[in-house]
Image (tube, rainbow, N blue to C red; front, side, top):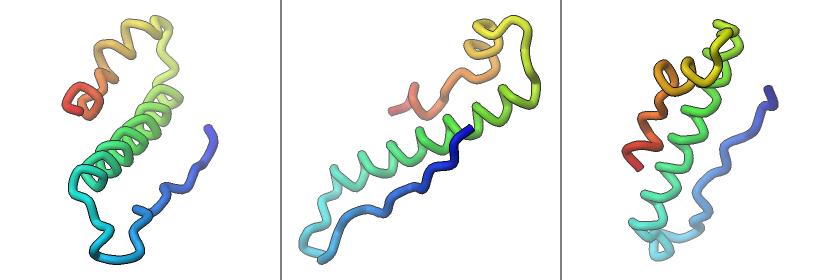
Amino acid sequence: MEKKAIPKLPVNKLSEFDQARALGWVLDRAVSIEERINDIIFIFFEPKKKEIFISHVLNSSVMSYG
Protein backbone atom coordinates (compact mmCIF):
# COMPACT_ATOMS: atom_id res chain seq x y z
CA MET A 1 0.00 0.00 0.00
CA GLU A 2 1.50 3.26 -1.16
CA LYS A 3 1.26 6.32 1.10
CA LYS A 4 0.07 9.44 -0.70
CA ALA A 5 -0.25 12.97 0.60
CA ILE A 6 -3.65 14.61 0.33
CA PRO A 7 -3.11 17.89 -1.51
CA LYS A 8 -4.49 21.14 -0.15
CA LEU A 9 -7.20 23.06 -1.97
CA PRO A 10 -5.26 25.35 -4.35
CA VAL A 11 -6.77 28.70 -3.36
CA ASN A 12 -4.55 31.70 -2.76
CA LYS A 13 -7.22 34.37 -2.24
CA LEU A 14 -10.72 34.26 -0.83
CA SER A 15 -12.00 35.67 -4.12
CA GLU A 16 -10.76 32.50 -5.88
CA PHE A 17 -12.93 30.31 -3.67
CA ASP A 18 -15.54 28.49 -5.74
CA GLN A 19 -18.13 26.48 -3.81
CA ALA A 20 -18.62 23.87 -6.56
CA ARG A 21 -14.88 23.32 -6.89
CA ALA A 22 -14.49 23.06 -3.13
CA LEU A 23 -17.32 20.53 -2.92
CA GLY A 24 -15.68 18.44 -5.65
CA TRP A 25 -12.38 18.62 -3.77
CA VAL A 26 -14.04 17.50 -0.51
CA LEU A 27 -15.75 14.55 -2.23
CA ASP A 28 -12.48 13.60 -3.92
CA ARG A 29 -10.66 13.65 -0.56
CA ALA A 30 -13.44 11.59 1.06
CA VAL A 31 -13.20 8.99 -1.70
CA SER A 32 -9.40 8.85 -1.30
CA ILE A 33 -9.72 8.32 2.45
CA GLU A 34 -12.38 5.65 1.95
CA GLU A 35 -10.16 3.81 -0.58
CA ARG A 36 -7.25 3.79 1.87
CA ILE A 37 -9.45 2.49 4.69
CA ASN A 38 -10.82 -0.20 2.35
CA ASP A 39 -7.25 -1.25 1.50
CA ILE A 40 -6.42 -1.60 5.20
CA ILE A 41 -9.58 -3.63 5.89
CA PHE A 42 -8.96 -5.84 2.84
CA ILE A 43 -5.35 -6.54 3.87
CA PHE A 44 -6.39 -7.25 7.48
CA PHE A 45 -9.11 -9.80 6.65
CA GLU A 46 -7.45 -11.41 3.58
CA PRO A 47 -10.79 -12.70 2.20
CA LYS A 48 -10.95 -15.87 0.11
CA LYS A 49 -13.95 -14.68 -1.91
CA LYS A 50 -12.65 -11.23 -2.85
CA GLU A 51 -15.52 -10.10 -5.11
CA ILE A 52 -18.18 -10.91 -2.49
CA PHE A 53 -16.13 -9.24 0.26
CA ILE A 54 -15.72 -6.08 -1.81
CA SER A 55 -19.38 -5.86 -2.82
CA HIS A 56 -20.83 -6.65 0.63
CA VAL A 57 -18.32 -5.36 3.17
CA LEU A 58 -16.61 -2.58 1.23
CA ASN A 59 -19.67 -1.22 -0.57
CA SER A 60 -18.17 2.26 -1.06
CA SER A 61 -20.65 4.57 0.66
CA VAL A 62 -18.94 7.83 -0.38
CA MET A 63 -18.77 6.81 -4.04
CA SER A 64 -22.44 5.83 -3.96
CA TYR A 65 -23.34 9.19 -2.42
CA GLY A 66 -21.09 11.26 -4.71
